[in-house]
Length: 115
Image 1 (cartoon, rainbow, N blue to C red):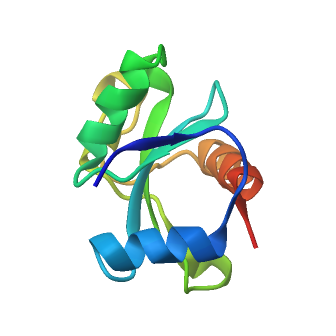
Image 2 (cartoon, helix red, strand yellow):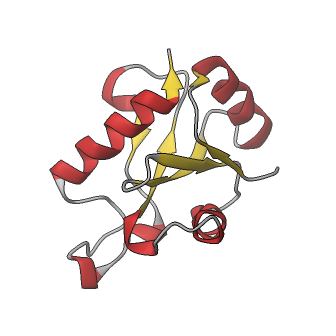
């Protein structure tokens, strides 16, 4: 699957069809919290991270998530990715530990995924 950088809103139905084609019920994504864009379509968040860095994103602003388009509420977004392990930025686990940063990611994804 080709990595796509999402700059404008897309439908949740389109995201669901991408999930079905790739992992069944989930799409891996990387969000640039500074630029307000997101990459999807990679087998690994590291691939999406690399695509965003080629698109002039700074690594320290990139955070990996998993999206479950069929889920509602909090269950639709999971803040778990290997690229999130960043002791130098105070994040020592695969999860995004900072609640303010998680809220920022939720807002960006909320703008980029409609429905």
